[in-house]
Image (cartoon, rainbow, N blue to C red):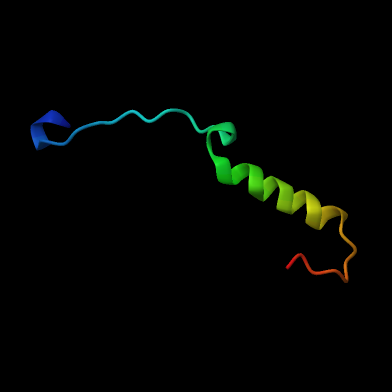
Length: 43
């Protein structure tokens, strides 16, 4: 069916947070926010 409509199927790799550099930064921010006092800003 895909070939009849001249489309192409591209198989993507499974998602892995280890392959996405921004995930490490977000993880550090979430951890900092979890342990920071409620009145302290993360800015």
